[in-house]
Amino acid sequence: MASPAPRRARRRARAAPLAGAWARSAEDWWWDRLAPSGSGYHLLQSDSMLLVLPGPGPARPRAQRRAARRPQRQLPPGHRAPAAKPKARFRPELAPAPAPEQGPDAGWGDRIPLEILVKIFGLLVAADGPMPFLSRAARVCRRWQEAASQPALWHTVTLSPPLTGRPAKGEVKAEKKLLASLEWLMPNRFSQLQRLTLIHWKSQVHPVLKLVGESCPRLTFLKLSDCHGVTADTLVMLAKACHQLHSLDLQHSMVESTAVVSFLVEAGSRMRKLWLTYSSHTTAILSALLGSCCPQLQVLEVSTGINRNSTPLQLPVEALQKGCPQLQVLRLLNLMWLPKPPGRGVAPGPGFPSLEELCLASSTCNFVSNEVLGRLLHGSPNLRLLDLRGCARITPAGLRDLPCRELEQLHLGLYGMSDRLTLAKEGSPLLTQKWYHTLRELDLSGQGFSEKDLEQALAAFSGTPGGSHPVLCSLNLRGTRVTPSTVSSVISSCLGLVYLNLESCRCLPRGLKRAYRGLKEVQWCLEQLLTSPSPN
Image: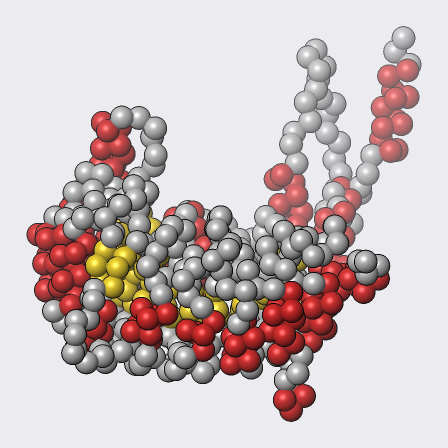
């Protein structure tokens, strides 16, 4: 029984590889193939990539690293490892291995210059915001932490405590926990903060804004959404501390009118943009605007909240034109408002000479007529966007008399209108003949224009002078009486049309009454219209 053991030992000795074979593993073979010695290239390896770089690189102790990673072979219990034989006689003479590096091998992230790394982080921050990317990147290595801590990357921040789903006690606890982190973040990261948004803060708004006033002198924009407990002292303190603050968004927040008025009195001379939610306190804020406390105001938006206020807002149009002469954007969204009568013998207001956007869209009954529209826009030749969705009293004749000649977006859609008998049946050619050369978006959904009237209106886009193509790229004809021939003509003429809404168009064949998005879908609609049989 003693004879088989030596035979097995001899077989193992013959099959045993040379000692240098471990140094020539598959990994080392590929390493030499990609960057052979003397080629002038070296490799940098990380967890997810392998870089081939020119120039002499750090020496790689391959055999030593491979041997260090190889686990020790476990033997079953009761067996002893055979005595190691001297292998010096089998080892070929190799060149002496270079001395290993001192310390861990630096990855590619450590070799990128700090300025380049900050620019890369800046692109990611511009796309997705600083959180949570910067906080995670700071944990990678010291170089990434140094780049992520640059205050220039923290210019736009949104802060919202986690929604615990618990009563008010749980919300207060979550806000205090986040506030404790902000006490360190504000002075160390937010020194160059420009835009700040606070969402769902119920009890700790004042401490947060106090930290902002102490650490963020470059703040220009502040948005408070669904925030409570904002007092006049808080806003006035912020206005005095942040001298560059010129934009304030208070939509859907519980803010007293006295607090807003006090803020406008302190910072009104530099205010550029203001967003408000209509409530019973809005009248006091508008009165401050009418008193010329914000002469440089450029954007004013007033919208309704979730709980609609049934009391109409009386807006003195002429007084607003005098108080905000630099207004460029005026939005009264889903708001029931009445223009204050000008009175007998009163001269027309100065108008809004810089106005570029007017939005009076509403889903309820409103009192916007041709006369009101004329009072608003009689001095606005630079208007680019006009949104009158839901304004059923506006007629094409009233729009034709407007002084603007370069209108690019016109929205006249009527949604949810049950009484179509009072709608205008003709006049749409007056719109397209005036603005066919500049219109990029046209919305006529729900209008009661006849088939012939729509055909004449849309024919203006096919007869452009000078052979130039129209710039129309969005057309909404939902619920109109447009015919297949008219749709085919406008698609063939407007080569840049990327949105076409034909839902609920009774004159079109079945299967084509839908919205088309993109050039391919619009061209497919054209092919179907040209190949479908004409209705009898």
